Image 1 (cartoon, helix red, strand yellow):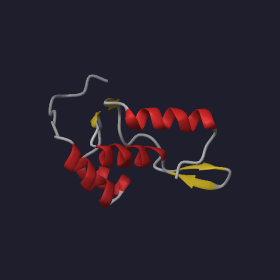
Image 2 (cartoon, one colour):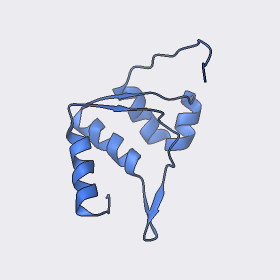
Image 3 (cartoon, helix red, strand yellow):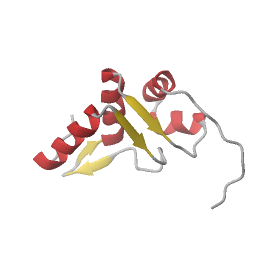
Image 4 (tube, one colour):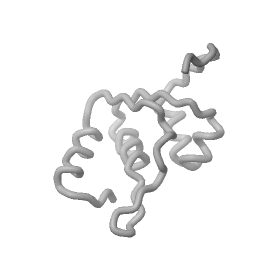
Length: 95
């Protein structure tokens, strides 16, 4: 359960219901944040809700599949694999 102010929760609900959502650099955010001592997992909750609603979600990540599994856990990783097609790029980084 996402616990935050009305505006933040409304924005979260809007993102969860968008027909298409893009998330850049998946895995670079903290998995868990604290709000008044209560642990929250906003991105995990958002991905789970979009999975349940069968909404198109496009993500980029610089993590390997194993790193994603470690960061988000087996349940979320399985959902990511089910809802997305992995396109791996092997070209060098230009950073």
